[in-house]
Every structure is written in C-alpha cells, then in structure tokens.
Length: 287
Image 1 (cartoon, rainbow, N blue to C red):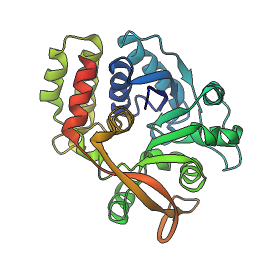
Image 2 (image 1 turned 45 degrees about the vertical axis):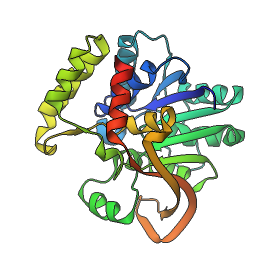
Image 3 (image 1 turned 30 degrees about the vertical axis):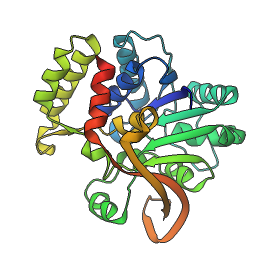
C-alpha cells in the first residue's frame, strides 16, 4: 500500500500515553510511516485554558529525545464553540496544507478539535483525509459503566468536535477507549525496567514519566497503567494487530449523552486488538 503520510494530533502530557505513541511512530522502521508533524491540541477539561501550551512543550521534548526533526505545531487552544465554527491555529493551517498535497492520515489521540476544524475550514479535504481517533465508547455496556463513573475525556473535552466526527461524512477509524485500548496494560515497575534496559534517552524518559504518573495516581490504577494511544499508531502501522468492522454509531446530543436506540451512520470501529503485538511493536520501535 506504500508509506502512509501521517500527522499526529496529541494532547501530550494529559497522561503519558501520547508520549509513548509519538515515540512509537517516530521509531518505526524507515518506510513504514511518513510522519509530517506533531500537532498539540488542548484538553481544557484536564488541564484548563493553558493546556495546549503545556502539551506543546512536552511534545517538543519527546520529539527531541527521539532525535527527530519532525515539526511540532501548536493546534487548537480551546474547544469548538459550535459545529459551524473551526478553531483557528497554526496546526489547522498545517493540516489544510498537508491535506492538499496528497492522501493524509491524521492520528488523533486527544480531543478532536483540530480534525473537526479541518473539515469545516477545508471541506474538500474530506476526499483526501482519513482520521484515526481514540475516544468515546464502543458499545452501550461500556457507555453505561464509564459515562456515569468518569466519562470519556477526549470526547468530553470537545463534544461538538466529537459529534462532527461521528456524524459528518468523513473517513473515520474510530478507536473507542473501551474495550480494546484498555487491554494495553503495563506494570509500571517491570515495564519501566524493560524500557531503561534499551539504553535509549527516549525510552528512559518514558520509564521515568510512567513511574511518576503512577506514583501520583497509583490509587486509581489497580495494578497497571493503560497505554491507550498506542492503539492508534498500531492501527496505521500494523493493521493486523487490530480487529475492526463497520458499526452504526449512536446519536449524541449537545451534552454528549448517547442514544443507542437512534443509530447514526456506519463507521469502522476497532473492537479488539492484540495487546502483546502492539507492545512488541512499541519495543521494536524504541530499540
């Protein structure tokens, strides 16, 4: 199929999985992905109005540790105010230009503000852009459990953008947070030792932030940490690691509430993955 041109659109430092996803994508063997850039998008639900700039700094740090010259571009600093208004940013301008050049895959691991804005600012890009987005829920059972307990952060941080992805005629591979990506679960101590044993600066940094995050949030973990966003990179770089198929997505209202009795359009949805294969691909890339 040839080398895929991709842009990563991340809320890096929201947790730690975006950092792993960036390092995974940049470390893949030559000819696998042509990473054009890393855009930083806000997550104001997690870290307030300054989140985009915080994430931009972290993305630059990770890219530098990968010894890469891939550009890091600031994206949307806030959610969409409506489904009719894009959020302007340098990242949006970058996406518009990249989409005009040739087919492009946007790997979006945070709120969908930038990709939803792209389709508003340049509607013709729908013919040339595929979106791989991690967020939301894969089925009614997951929705009933997690919406009431904690919601879903990527979707909740920009509900207008979430609705745009699910409802607009865009080429979307939807990777719901549950159940598949939640299987990419690592033990922070033993996995951190494996990372440090690689002897690479970026791998050691990933081990450090994994263990720091665990120390801060350990009471919530139940023995491990999910590296959710790796599912998005694997879906593009190693499609055999994931299982997907067409599913009619539920209707969402302005508050993000789902109505499974009113199905919408069909999109490709990832409902399972081989977590060992995904982690093996990460380790190969980091080594």
